Image (tube, rainbow, N blue to C red; front, side, top):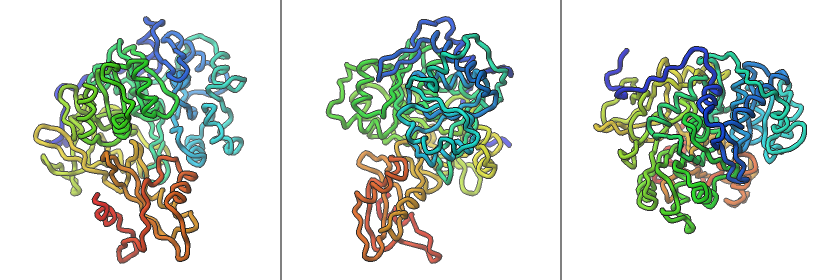
Length: 524
């Protein structure tokens, strides 16, 4: 049924992808004529990988997988820091028809245990500094037969695996609708969901957003603070620059303001991809550079809504716009975004050409201008399913439409404005955090009777977890004790930034905690 209010993009770019198609082969072939051009730079070591070396290493890696019996449609997990080895492993897998599963490197042993079992991964590629997180799992997972270490020497290193592979350029006989890679969504409700993407999706996002919105060119140098394991970072640092022959700067470490400004000064990228929390921290850094020291032509933001004040201050200070947009693991990259020269801070912009959006009310009907409802998106990059999760697949993917779980309004000019999550989920630094997970963790502390967690905006308007805690009679605990407790059990970004000790929590007659009352009390 045609929806009259749905936002149709004017003339969506048509990207014709043949049925017989391999995404890694396409990206490498686009750069076959520029073998000496630098594809990836490691900002920590200064090491560079040219497009010619990238193609050779990726094909050697693919052949080494074949030699070790890891064949088409097998899954393998990549838990690696952002170094030039990451794209070699990712592209090499795809060349061999093997399905790489990109894992968030910030997770815990328990999270990785779930992912390795759920995906039935036959191999793991892990950076040396992350190895201790995986060591308790070695030998406990029947499908996991081989582990290779990145950034290391020795027989089980990624480097020796690449060296052992023949250089001949075999390409697996995949098609555009084959499963190409997975990304695990950040476990917003319960366990993480293995989100399955196709070969056609990588180049679709590069053409529809990277080229059509950002205007990415061969002479661009790009740097993304968001890592390669994120859907956002994967496009930013790998697919987009490779689609046009640009150069990407990779930073293995956490992107502190000092390190980010170091990259922006030294490598002078023309495009910087960030998240609101980082932009706020960069603007607050007393050691921030002068505009003249940088070479930026455009910046992007995603992961959570960009507060208008941060965007305006950034443009005033550095002379470049921040294009705030929204994407998702399910859609692979940004489908709604501000455009260069048409930025309206405080909004998420307009639909990316090639995507169709609608806002749907609780009764299932489309909302008119100014009416809040759930944002739904239709486009060529929607994931095909959550692995082994039929119920959640059906709840999120409804025919041509994918439910975002975000509340939005649209104004008369076609600009969309974020209105919060459709559930109690929080986004902290662009990553979903379940309040229930943090509450359950707090409840494992011996002094806690009850706990409730909500999102509260900090002084920059960015959401962070706040916990309301009821202690057991006669027990004592400090905020610092409880924060440390959460950090030992969960990924560190999930810890509550504020803890309020209260005598009781507001509840319904049936005993359910009323988080909306806590939000109201906190002024949220």
